[in-house]
Every structure is written in structure tokens, then in C-alpha cells.
Image 1 (spheres, one colour):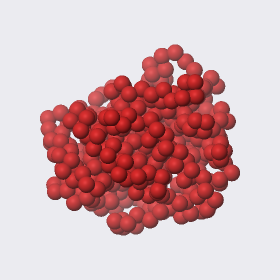
Image 2 (spheres, rainbow, N blue to C red):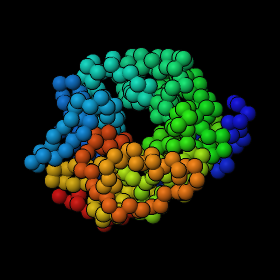
Image 3 (cartoon, rainbow, N blue to C red):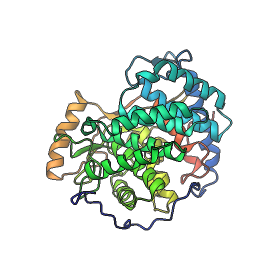
Length: 407
């Protein structure tokens, strides 16, 4: 541990109960939500099984409705990553419900590994694939081979070029492999945890950096923050490392203060100042799924985040700036985001974020009046949704808010 890392070996600032192999479900504060949530999960799994390309096990990068039918894009380079996400969600759904047959998921996984597994090259993809394989049954050899690839990356010369998503997914995968009993996985997880805590975390704010480059050191995405917090939770669950516990609990505490007035999560964040730099686009996957990767574990640990979960999900149900649910049912599709109407959106996001990062002028919730829905659906969105919600009983919002899913 370096002296200036900002993460000493002291106890976490928020007292935590000891974690065991059994992680209890959050309290079922509103039983009527039980009726609605399984319906969303069921439709999500049916959608994924409808759009998968069975001959190679690939799920689409993007799906749009054209003439009332699904039009899928399988050619984008991110389709294999989205496939891992989709399989991870379906695997969880098969384990937790009767909507999905485990044999079908295993068959798709084997097909995908045979046709695309050897071509997976990014460290992030290898890490998430290791989560999938370690949590599965009957894939121990594939998991061991993937762990070996993750180990080579983590101990290789290019480690300084990794992103927060790379190292977080690799750490999560190593923790899952250690839970599954794979040899050397715990050592790999400890090494990756040390790398993240000493080099990828801001020493004062304890927020993650996007990477180690100078130009992106202070601008981090909500996705990277999410994966960092989840990785810290997994590391603490595996090792009881108090630094990981502190990073998780303080990180969650700071993250919930980023949430906007309508429950929305900002897209770009200052790692140093822990303020929102640009809220748009607001992604539905962040609202109903990815935020839950750290909020639900925080809830299980007794942290007061039920209100943030409620507001986050309510945004998807229509309590957003357009007063429009982000799910359609005929046919089923989950919309991607609410975005600004502007040209060159990526360049303009960074043009707004850089001076805000320098001056500390946080972006304000709902600042843009010209917004629209991006109606495309990404398969990884529904994969994350199934992963976090399949089999969970309680949810702190009312079934009356769940419009449009009664057909």
C-alpha cells in the first residue's frame, strides 16, 4: 500500500456487518411489487431468447423496431461483450425462475465459446466472461482457461493501459472464480485489488479514475463508477479487506449524492470533486439495472439507499423529464436513453465537462430542455436487468407505478 493512496488499513467509516456466503434478500417493504417485477424479468428473458442468433450464440449489439418487427445489429464489435452480459442475465434467470431453461442457456454458452471465445481479447470481456463461467455449472475448464488469461493480463507489461472497466471486471471475475474454488484466483483478486486501490483511485475523494492517462484522470463515467463499486464489494466479500470496505461504503455515500432531482444518474462525473459534470444522456440501463449493482448490496449491508432505488427505477416507469415510460410492450422493447437533441454530442459533452471539472461547477439536474428518447434497445441492458432482479422479492416502489406491463 503506498503512502499517498488515501486508503489506509483502518476500519471502514460506516460499520459493516460481516459478510457470509449467504447474502440475504432486501426486505420486502411492498409485497405488491412482487406481481410486477417478475413480469418485467419474464419479458426481458423472452426478448433475449427471441433475438439471439442461435447458430453462433451471439446476441445483438442493438435492436430497433421496424414495421413492428425486431431489426438486429450483430456486426458491431461490442456484440460479443453484450452476449456475455445477456448470457449472465439468462443464467441468473434460469437459476432463480422457471422462465428460462438452464439447458438452453448452457447450449448457447457453449456455442458462443466455440465460435467467439477465442477471439475475445479485451481485459474487460475476459473478466466478465470469468464471472459468467465461474457462476455456471459444467464450465470449470473454460473458467480455468479464462482465469489464466486474466492472470496474464494482470501481471503483464500493459497493465498501465487498462481502464477502470477493465480492472473492475477482471477483479470481479477473479473474486467469482475464487468463490468457485479455482486455484490461484484469490491471489489474482488480491493483486488486482491492490492495483486498483493504489493506482486507479483518487487519493482524496476515493472515487475511481477512468484510466491512468492525464487527459481522462478526472472525468469518469457512471458506468466505471458502478463497476468499481461492485468490484470493491466483491473484494471485501472475499477478503474482508477494510480498504475495499471503506471504498465501497464511502463510494456509495458519495454516489447517491450525484442522483438528480428526478432520480437520474449523471453520465460524466468528476473523480476529484465527486460532482456531476454532464447528466445526459440518461441511460435506462443505469436507472433500472446498473445502479442496482451497488445499491442492492448496499441495501443488504444496511445502508439507507431504499429511496435512491425507488427514485432510480421510477425514472424508467415514467417519472422522467418526458413523463414517458422507457419500456414498450407491443412488441416488448426497453428504450436506451433520454438524450439531448444536439449535433456532435460526444464532443460537446466533453467540451462542457472539462471546464466544469476545472472550476467545480456541477451540472444541474434536468438542465436541458431539448431532449428526446433514443428508442434502440441494447441486449446488455436486459442482461443486467435479469442479473440484478431475477428471483428478488422486494422492491421499494408501488406496483401502481408500473404502467404499461399489464398486457
